Length: 165
Image: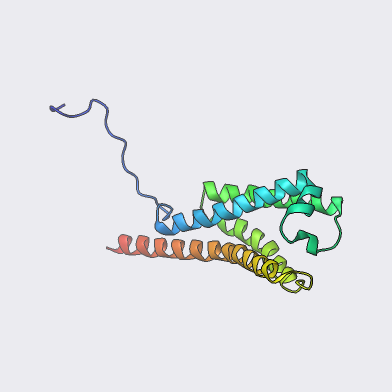
């Protein structure tokens, strides 16, 4: 051992083999974090305190009367989505991110269109808030899928050019 060297060898620097250390992965994780937190808060609130959710969550009172059964079912399903989004957030591999985002989008896109067509009793501010918030989260689910596909295609191309070079 020469002077100035540490007696413990440094851990080898391993580059990600699937592009998960990329800027696209950071964007994927940010989008997943937003969706995860949204589903966790909405799901927990609706599952545990359905009347409070109905009475206090913005614009929910624009819809039909409270049904505790449906509120708790919705809360439980929303918490289930939070679980798969959380797994994808922690391990942002395509095998997790695409199914999680697809499951979320399967809910979020029809939910957006439902609210878009049920704004009769909303104020202008409520209509803008509801439409914008639902559009953003619906688009985030699709964005996660697109970014994952782009990231992984770039990685495959870089692996192919590295192998042939």
